[in-house]
Length: 405
Image (cartoon, rainbow, N blue to C red):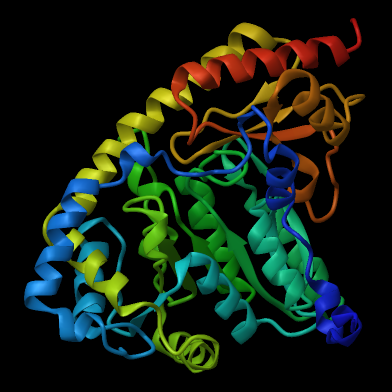
């Protein structure tokens, strides 16, 4: 038999398997409480409403819904999506355009391929979203990290690194940020930091990708404006998804950006998949029009707040003084930092084998100073009572591994 991998193109050297997918292999066939992957809770999905929507599409729009559609997306859906964004506080400029993608992951991939060349510098959050790091790695970017704390990405660090790299003659292209309920830390960037980041982008002629999968169902009423809304120069490329506010199975995301950037993404998407599924677009469009997305967001907010509280309360009860973590205002995750002597990758193996609990080691979320003593915990999928059990089991192991004093 021919060994196919020896025919791989050189660019495949930049493709790395996802840690999260590898963890799923470790847990397959085991009775394990997973605090690893960020799967939405199925209780959020609008099952009954979906049946009504499908019936309406069959009766009223089947021919259009089953046909090819424009690469940027079906025009009625894009118009509905534009209104949805405006209604939810996302500023849509007259020079902006929208492209519908197969999940927000495709948005990131297309944007990176259009904008980033080999050796171009991309500033990413440290720690930051693993799948975005993989996308920029595939684009052969030079990534530099800007630390994330409880107030989000630190623009002081961004400016210091951009200034230094520009002085060295490096081509600094863009900043990637997940500013609201960040993955993996759950932290949210303050208004002051958002304004500062936009000032830096203007001063050094940079673009910003604002990745926003979680802000629609934040648990607190007071959240800062979107970077896209604060942007007055068209520098922000805004991307989000229906995976968390409707259901991941529709595989729909979108990018809102200056029309010239969308044009480049559209040209590339034509070669990738022609267009995202038309039927999914009609399902999402009807879900917006009927208020189902809004009700799903409300349901998600209540369900995930309860789960967030269950995890954070258990950590406070079991690990106070032995570890630190963030308190997310939304999203699916918190990042836990353990004693410096603890290697989270080694801990994961024991956690699965001895305690029946899985998590994601945190070092993969770093591009520069990898912290081996960190772990990302997700509270999105298991029931609250199971989250408490899993967190207690994990805490038992952490206590065992933490040196005294």
